[in-house]
Image: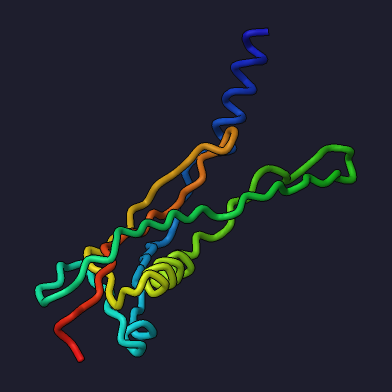
Length: 142
């Protein structure tokens, strides 16, 4: 019995072994020009001009999690199945941050930051994004 368990463990580990891969380059960036065209400022820096404090805003975004059903093979076994985590659309959360700030009467978000976060959902870990900033109304601009 121990031999069978050891053999199964070796087979399982062999199925999930590291494989060669090509070089990967990931570039992340966010375009604020849409907001700038509306006279709205988003910056990770402090605003050095005159302003009124409006409030702190935080938006936390979690992608959807859906169950993928397995399918039966011709031999009677099952393949596939499990949990699929959707794409993390950070631009959607930035839009929420902008909308909330605009509703509050702000025309800028300073100290803007994006922090990765995660939460447990049963047996899986779901990555998320926490976006925050300090909403202000600039008083030194026309």
